[in-house]
Image (cartoon, rainbow, N blue to C red; front, side):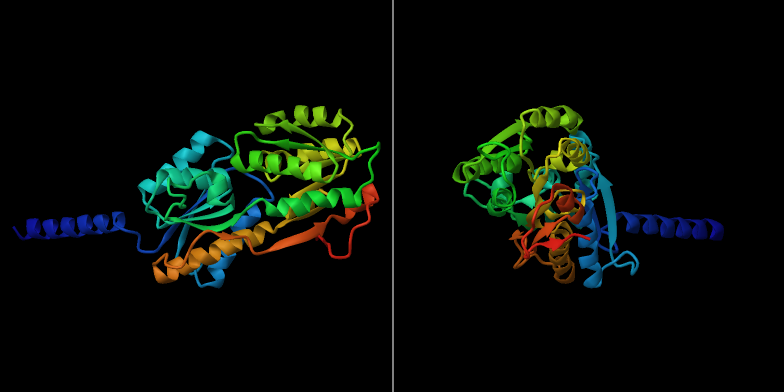
Length: 323
């Protein structure tokens, strides 16, 4: 009987121990969702984790756990990733790029979402019938006003080959912020007396064909739209533009590091850092009071010295060279 008694007691301890591992996590778990692999976008994740670390949260200190998943551009995979994190559930979600943020908003109304490299809730079309953003959505967002400055840089730095400057761009019809940006840039082109030629690109697999088609129209410059497909296809776009001696301008500082001539736009690392500071505040207080989606705070005017030299472009003194 004693042996049975000890065996029962031991079994009970094992059972209780196993139950403990399936309850709410002993340390906070962050589900980090990336929509696709990209050298520029990945800087946001570094900024996010650096902000957490500065505020005392890191896996090294064993006071948080970050579960990282990348959908590699697959919408079904992205949906599976978010569903998995929601079912666990994780303590908070960190979403990088629009597709990740929209998917997370669709799948949970309770887990706090800290978005980055994403537009405003209005641009993502996730406002409710009363015009309010989801109550669990936070982080750092961007609107389209900065594109005005980015696009207007081009006529100031380039002379047209013909009578009028011709600028080409690619946009993704399925991404709200990309389509909205296209409409905004059309209006800007009219104001600047510039001819704009825009072609749709809904898959990075078609980047070679669409870029070549655009270059065949004898454009003076290429404007890299703030678009996930453009990010993923940038090396293909750059190679083709360089072969045709067509400079690339953009609104994303990270693309200048990858070969574009110049940009006025958000620093992707700082974008992630800003979202990470909000997440750290939530981890400290266990409350979202005072948090909301806030506009990106750090934008830069930057240029690529090698690209500037290749195209013999004079850059204003208020632009900073990328390293």
